[in-house]
Image (cartoon, rainbow, N blue to C red; front, side, top):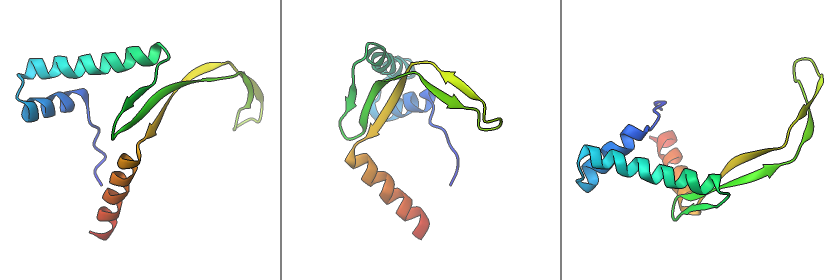
Length: 104
């Protein structure tokens, strides 16, 4: 399996091919969608994309952690983390893709 990363440029190129917008318009559309998703998450909103999954933020409280090398305790401050929960359709699609790769 190739370790390919899909980039913003790849997404805008796909929009260009599939939708027929110009390359500039496609790049602007992808940038706009990503900006809207980002702004919503920063505002504490959930972003649900049907058939794909749900992005949300979660507040984690402060806790005491441990350095795995030295065993020394260190405080971990409270923070906000991004979470993603894939839809059932996405889980099934990924699982089927994995089955095809192992049998093929």
